Image (tube, rainbow over all chains, first blue to last red; front, side, top):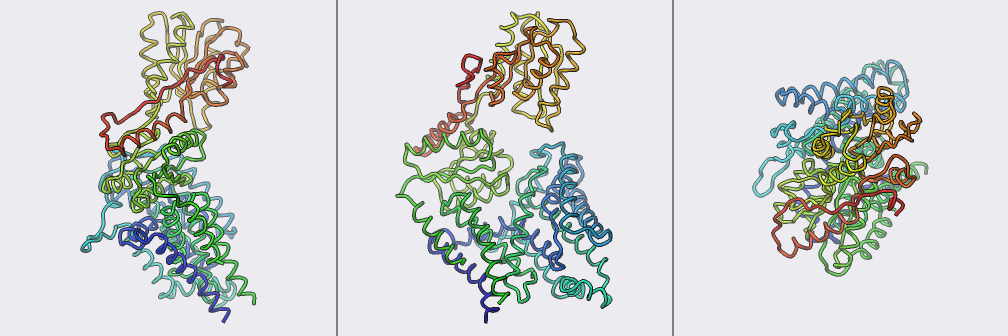
Length: 314
Length: 303
């Protein structure tokens, strides 16, 4: 009973938030346009959070995703300035993301550094690289090809509504993460590692290699989100992704309050992302002070996790 | 728990929703910076007089979130949007506002076809004022060291104007045109560069003045000159922006003699005027609106 309450508490809270905004903002909140806006605004966070879930399944962490997102944007923009085609730039940025993620995985699983410390280190390294490559400057204007920034403006026309490409991209990434984590042996092994690393090792799971790969995927996701961000703002700045990391971790934590054993699940992470994004959107429309908004978001994360751990103890 | 919070939010919202009035969203990633705070305060004061409902949104450095908040404001159907961010980076949001017919006004934001008007200080004017101050103080003759930064357009234009003014005095020689490394804030490297120039020109009087395109190099040059024991030579230093550290140095009455203060509050209140004109249906002819600046010398630095 308490378990059900715990699992559904966050979902009820989510529903309450939606109902609350729907009542307060009857004309604007539940409109197709606003919901599409929210989905687009959240797309970058959704990608980072979904791929962050992959390492958090193993009770690991990646603090470097924000600076990796910035670095990926800078790498792509720098390649753009050298007049290479768009796909080369995207590929370069994604490769940098995967390489950076694998490097994190190497530090954590092969060298054996605590993920918190290892990725705190690489956070600084990636951020430093982004500054170094860009000379600390924002790359924008003619350097960013219209085809690239146009991606963030375009979408798939479905009758009256247009589903933005960014939303579609995020949905695909979530789908892939869900499939990998919940429908493949790779994913089940990651959950086994998260359950008990020693037992997983004794059961013949190649823990080191899997952790390495998982971090690689998280890095790749962070780079993808960084590219989406750069397309949306039609520019690249060495710090622009830094806000993504904490929100992504918060979203995964919110999601963890909804699963049976408190383990991260991609679809629950998505609910966490939606809670954060809907609060931002709704409270802005209600003209709540942006600082009060920040306090509220923090309190809601704490409240959800507190309720979950409280009922778990009983 | 969540529901209690939700109740708290609704209580807040009820307090916040004032009687029907024009709503203006002010959106910036830079509210933590003193200049931006002053713009916003100036805007809020002017808006309060007009009875507008102003929603100030700070995205804490996140530029993509500015786009999101512009989209939110468009959905909310505000009457006008004021931004303090480079318009080139938030083009998607500006297009959403343009589609909805909501005017966008910039506060020191940069020019863009989708911004009805940008309210800012005249960088050309500021540079002219300090460069002429230098030229007059040294009676139109002597060697001048310039600190410039051509990679950043708003500072680049200052250098161009100073070049023209010094070039117009036949007896003024530009000894060096230095671009300091600004990654540490600009003071330390400017100081190092100035120390090298002082060492290369040891004769008293061989450097008449230092013109800096902003305050940090002026402060660095001041430190170098004082530490080299050459403060008594009467080298004139000027900066631009009149930040608090520069004001202190100017008030102390040493070599750092002048800087230019932008009227940040005035930029905010002028932005409110521009919004009012747009809401009244006026078509603006000029896309950049300048707010007067003020020369700061030891006479008024303490104000």
